[in-house]
Structures are given as structure tokens and as C-alpha cells.
Amino acid sequence: MLKLSVVGTGYLGVTHAAAMSSLGFEVVGVDVDSKKIAQLQSGRVPFFEPHLEELLSKELSSGRLKFTTDFSQLSDCDVHFICVGTPQQKDGIAADLTYVDAAFNSVAKYAKAGSLLVGKSTVPVGTAEKIKSELANSHPTLELAWNPEFLREGFAVEDTLRPNRLVVGVTSDKAEKVLQEVYQSLLKNNVPWIRADLPTAELVKVAANSFLATKISFINAMAEICEAAGGDVTVLAKAIGYDPRIGSRFLQAGIGFGGGCLPKDIRAFMARSQELGAEQSLEFLREIDSINLRARQRVIDLVRADIGTDLKGKKIAVLGGAFKPDSDDVRDSPALDIAAQIHAAGANVSVHDPKAVEPARIRHPELQYTTEIDDCLRDADIVLHLTEWKIYREIDPKVAHGLVKSARIIDGRNALDREAWVAAGWKFRALGRS
Ligand code: UDX
Image 1 (tube, rainbow, N blue to C red):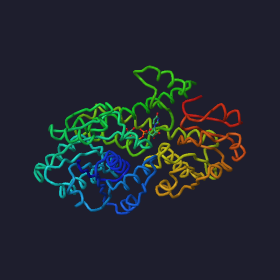
Image 2 (cartoon, rainbow, N blue to C red):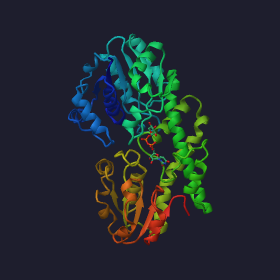
Image 3 (cartoon, protein in one colour):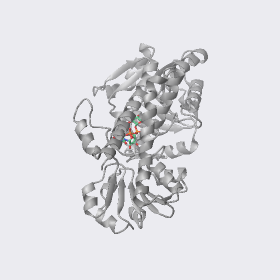
Image 4 (cartoon, rainbow, N blue to C red):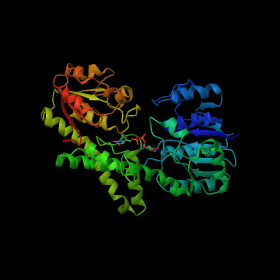
């Protein structure tokens, strides 16, 4: 049986390591962050991801899964998966490849001759070819493949163990065979297997995320038109979604996309297209990004239209801080961005989230936080529903009416039951619904 290493223990790495262990492989997870590794060794996942902690504990007790900060412990592994982050650069829109470069250097230093290095991180096209030629000089027996990951936060375990496709960028039959051996038990479920060259494998990931971002911004552009023309974007989305060529998923209009992938991936893709002299081809992504950011501003405009332009001293209840439900990830969270902008305008903002309060506090210590919905709503001049957690759909609008100062709500995710809120006496606004 092959022995695997997984380098980088974020959302992607921890899930991949635990999932591969559950398939029966011996796996060593490696990270430079000793605090994270200590948590993982004791069976705790440093972030919220449904089902992952159970899987982690189970695999740790099986003895197949280990975590360490010591890179020399990957020296007996046959395959090394590089799962480190590629955040947006601090002073530009391109991807920061510092962690990718450091991870490949460390792995190459300890990897045994003939082993396979597999990039899973989302990188600008051309990165794999560059790493491959560096390896050819420094460690000619090591081989490189690229195997992009499409997991969604909130469904990470499910998406890893039941992927809708497996894409492998390889330059030899031998590398493809090794990866087929790794994914053998998943392939039994007829998962499509796509062999590609290195640049195509890198591109599949950013193309998929660009398409998803485009779909969301498309429906948010329709929301703007609906507001201008007196239409209802939720009905429009339902109606166009029945066309199987369009499909109904990812047509939920609202405050738009955020998180650690979509925003930075479309920006890095634009930056790379410029380097390639093909910037015109991705010019539309600039508009996708602007539509996305405009939706956040629209909420702030609606707040001002409802309670007055001067927000000083107004109490604003924000339901949701995470970039999407079932996650505690607040990276580029539209909800938190809106909360911070409203606070900066002088309002007194109280943010509720069932899981993301602590990560949110680290990014925006200036905001007030609570894990009690009632505390968040109490005496509010307006309520903003910004992350569509299920618990918010279970709020009784009549009870909530008794808590707030003024019964006004903006549904930034088009997920609440408008009729029920209106019937309970609320002034209800939603993006894209007149
Ligand atoms: C995304 C991709 O879906 C995944 O395949 C890739 O591997 C990583 O990036 P993720 O960031 O976990 O996954 O979130 P996703 O479910 O795609 O949602 C992204 C954002 O779009 C969220 O902020 C979500 O609220 C928003 N969204 C999604 C909408 O605004 N409307 C929709 O209809 C769908």
C-alpha cells in the first residue's frame, strides 16, 4: 500500500489527509504551524467543517494518520500532496506563491528518490511547469503532477470522498498510474477521470471558479435590473433555472460571493492573463468582481434609505458573519465586510454567528459580537440577514418583533419567508425584489 504525505493543514489539507487515511493509506500531515499540528494531534480541527472532526478522531485512532512539523517524516512516503494556501498578494491582485514555493522546496529536500509530488493548491497557470523544471535540475528523480481540488467548505468531506470528477495533470503514464492507485476506491463509483497536461489541470480549477463567480454575478446583475424595473429576481432565477442548459444552482441572488477561493481566484486569473498577454479574454471578470462588490454597497444604501443617511448611534443587528453557512470562514466575507463598513459609518453594530464569532473578532475586533440571536436583535433599528444559516430561517418574526426597536429587515440572501415577516408587521426588503 502506498504511503502518503499531505503538506499544509488548512481546509483542504486536513480533509484530504483524513479522507486518504479513511481509504486505508498511511498518511502523514505536515505543517510549519506547530499550534495547528498540536491541535490536530489531539483530534481537534482548528476550524469548523461538518463531519471532519469525527473523521479525524477515527483516523487518528486507527493509527494510519499522523501529524508533524518535522518534514523529515515524509521521507518514506511514495506520494506527497501539496495543499498549502495561495492567498491574494497584499499589494496586488495576483496570487502569493510564497507558501507553494516553500512547501515544494521542503518536500523536495526530504522526498525519497522516485516519489511523486502532487500539487493540489490553486495556482496561476504555468506554476507547475516552472516547478517541474526546477525539480529536473535539483532533484531529477522526483516527478510532478497537478491534481486540482474542487471541494466546497461545508461539504469538504463529502466532496473529497465522493468527487464529481478527478482531474490529473501528468507528464507520464507512470504518474497517472500512481494517482489511479491512490484514488482506486473512489473510481469504483464511476467518477469521471480526466487526464490532462499540467497547464490544463491548473486551468480547470480557475476556469470552474470563474464560471461559478460569473453565474452568481449574473444573477446579481439581474437583481439590480429587477429592482430598477419592479421585478422579482427569485422568481426570475427559478424560471430560468428550469432550462437544463442554465440549471438552477448558483443562481441565489444576494450580497454575493466571498470566501478564500472565488474572489482571489478570479483576481489572480486576471493578473495571470495579463502576464500571458491575454488580458482581453478575461476582461469580463473585472465586471464580475465589480457586480459582486456592488451588492455589498447596495445593502448599505438600503440601510440608509430605511433609517436615514446618518448612521451615528443607530443600532444595527447583523445576522451572519461567515462567508456562507456551515462554515466559520470569514475570509473576504461579504457579511463581515458590510458590518465593518456600517460600523465605520458610525453605527453600533452587533454581529451574530453560530460558528464564526471568534474568527470574525480576530479580523474585526472593533465590532460587537454575540452568540445569542436575541441579544443581537434587542433594540435594533434595523436587522440585516447576511449569511443564510438555517437557524435564521427558524426565527419567529412575531417574537423577533418584540425585541427590536424598529421592525425593519433586509434579507441579503433571499432566504427568509417574506410573507411570514410581513404578516408579523415587519418592513421587509430584499435584494432584487421590489
Ligand atoms: C468554491 C467552489 O464552489 C469550490 O468548488 C472550490 O473548490 C472552492 O471555491 P467555497 O468557497 O467553499 O467553494 O464556496 P461556494 O459554495 O462556492 O460559495 C462561494 C460564495 O458564493 C459564498 O459566499 C456563497 O454565499 C456565494 N453564493 C453561492 C451566492 O452568493 N449565490 C449562490 O447561488 C451560490
